[in-house]
Image 1 (tube, rainbow, N blue to C red):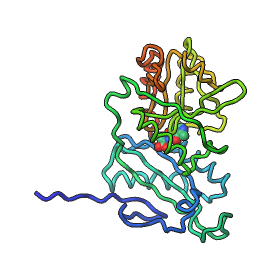
Image 2: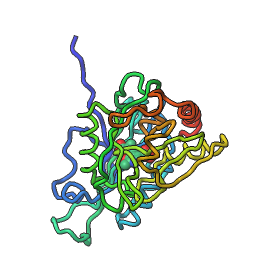
Image 3: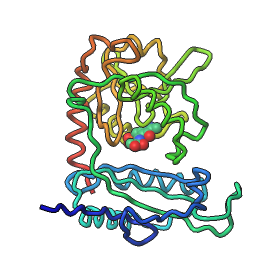
Length: 291
Ligand code: PDD
């Protein structure tokens, strides 16, 4: 029997199109300069996790970068819901991108460009078997990025290189490291936030030139509600090596135990108690925070 392959529909500047249709012109500032922002939002059962928080983060960055943000939260949520219906994808990842728009290729902001805005709903990516139960390996990688890492810009080449290095090392993620007068410290993963546990205290890098992760924030709040002490500060490599537990968080990874960093096992090489406790509570939180 012949199979019909359904083409995915995407939203672009106010209209829905088949994904295969070329939509971004080569003069798009995102294409030429990486002059744009993105968000990734989880869709579970056709609803969106912490939708407004993601959009707020994007809107705030767009304001700073003087990229006009033309849609209201309600319009965006309605559009996202339409993508669920049209594409019949219930569990997925909603990718949203805004760029400064089309203009002749001169570096300075163009006077008349109108932003390009698109949304694509993809099925949830495949994850390594049993990763949430068994935990994952990570590698370390120098943080070669710039000073505006709190913006979720589409300039992701350092992150791409770090993730590729992780893949080549048979690892799930790369943890970025920087240095100061006290030594080497961690910032964040190539697409995740970092946590460690020592003597029951949860530590995570402070919001100093890293992305304010939506999942990071949720996990910190959950931990505080569970009366777990949380420290937001620089976490140094030497502390990390002797931590009891390590985990990473992101929209896609949720709370993911880390059991090995480079060649060294974290503690006994098994997911830690507090990690699994937070993983459980975050799962519960997810069920309560859909829009
Ligand atoms: N990345 N840090 C970086 C550099 C990230 O790219 C991400 C997310 C995070 C975690 O943020 P959140 O909890 O809001 O998802 C931290 C997404 C998932 C991506 O690029 O695919």
